[in-house]
Length: 250
Image (cartoon, rainbow, N blue to C red; front, side, top):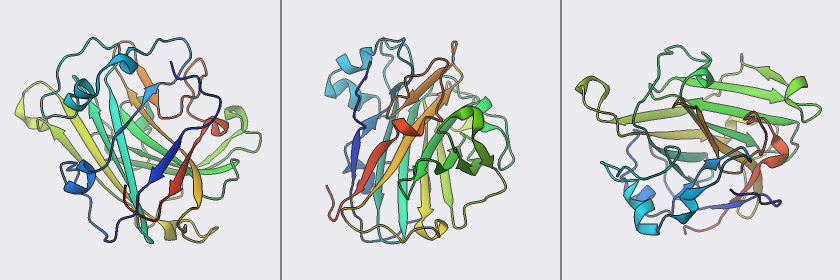
């Protein structure tokens, strides 16, 4: 289990061009970036994923991921940026995709979802929540957490991120009748959506965290920077990691 006291750091590489998300993570861009893996977010589980070889981890990103002796279904993420947008990519191994909600800002967290929490200013009382389901349904909101405590936080679901673009792919396609293998997500988030701060410059950092909920039996809650709370709770901004905007590609 990852019990680090210091937040993890992600060096977010620079790209020169915009692109329109289509959910395909086989693009040379994403293939060139090293994946980071989410881990169980509560402190009561061991983490056998850390014992997998690099070859075994890479195999999980294939079209037909192998059945490994893991207690959950792994998730890899990557990120990149230019002066206009932050791009995020998630690859979710999933043997039983569950997703029924169809409307924006439905309670996607009751089913299966990937999530990104972004704090552009570094003031952890104020951050943004983005969720995307396997049906490419979006939940987005502004969060105000005056006490850095879920009990007193306020979630403004009326906020819709202007210019947000997302896309999802499923393998196999939902209508195929075959057993599920994985689903993938691309998000394109414009910096203009955050008027309280100028677009980032190389070397600057945001506080962020990335998550996934999977309704396996029992449900699985994974995070880039584990929140270490029982029951699982993603709204722990003190545990956000650091995303540093690099000047060059990795």
